Structures are given as C-alpha cells and as structure tokens.
Image: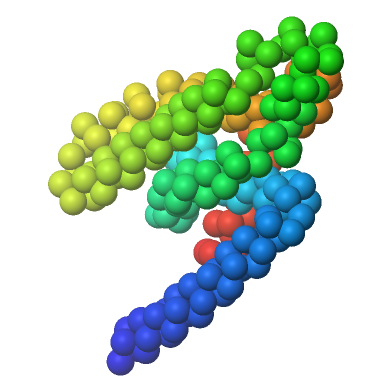
Length: 222
C-alpha cells in the first residue's frame, strides 16, 4: 500500500509540474514576443544556471570513478539521474539560437563592420561557428553521460569487474574534455556578451560553480 500511495503522489506531482511547465512556456513565449531583449537575457542566465546541475553531476561522477572510494556510492544514482537530463537541456538551448543577434554584439553585422576589434575576432565569434561549437559541447557531454550511465547499470546487472576499469579509463580523458568544453562554453555563452572584455579564469569559475550546483542538488534530493 505504501508503494502504491507513493506512486500515486508522484503521479500527481508530475501532472502538476507538467501543468506549471506548460503555463511557464506560454508566459515565456509571450515575453519573447513583447520584450525580446529582456526575455533572452533572462533565459540565458536561467539556462546557464540550470545546466550547471547536470554538468556538475557529470564532473563529480567522473571524479568518483577516477579516484575511487566510498564517498560517491551514496550519491551515484542521483548524479546519474542528473546527467540524464542533458538531452533535454540540449533541446532547451534551441530557443537561444533565435536570440543571438539580440544577445551578442558580435552577431550584428553593422556593429562588427564599425568595430576593428570585433572584426579581428570574427573568425571565432560568428553565428555558424558558435552553433557548431555548441553542438560539439552537447555531443561530448551527452556521449560521456550515456557511457557512464549505461556501463554503471550494466555493472549492477552483471557484477562484471572489468566495467570498473572501463569507467575509470573513460573518466580520466572525460574530465579533461569536460574542463575544456565547460571553459569554452562559458566563454561563448557568457563572456562574449562583452566581446571586448576577457578573463583567463572565467571558465574555471564555471567549472567550480557547476560542481557546487551539483552538490546542492544531491544534498536537497538526498
């Protein structure tokens, strides 16, 4: 009975959450039509915050597989659940593509034409290359997350010890790729809002922030 009651409460919560989400989407669409610039700025900030949770989960899970220890077992399933939202976050990135010229000065040809510094950066800061880089980031994150979760479930099912080594071998280069992709995504999505300003530590701040966001998530859920 307790299991059935728990499932019933969860089903009600899911339906209510879906209803709230649909209403929020309608309000977002209205905001995008009425005030594009505030909408896309708010959407970008919110998006960068929320994607920090699955990305932080990805980093913590790879760190656990790489260094071992018991500390990660209690939160492993929560981290894997967070990682599995990455395909959804990739879909939620798409609305930002419609606001690139609203958000970024380098995406406006008339501004670039009048600014020699932006012209020098145009080989990197341009819309087609921006989209290609974003697609590459998501492909890497989703690929790593899929392997980690698939091999972990297979390990539980088969008790195959070789999967531990496989997860460990993946996590080493995976953390390197994670650091690079998070750094460049932070530069692309946030630092390039002010294309004349730069910071050598900007990407590292996001690596740390995402880990903190993931820890906060697992603490709340646990």
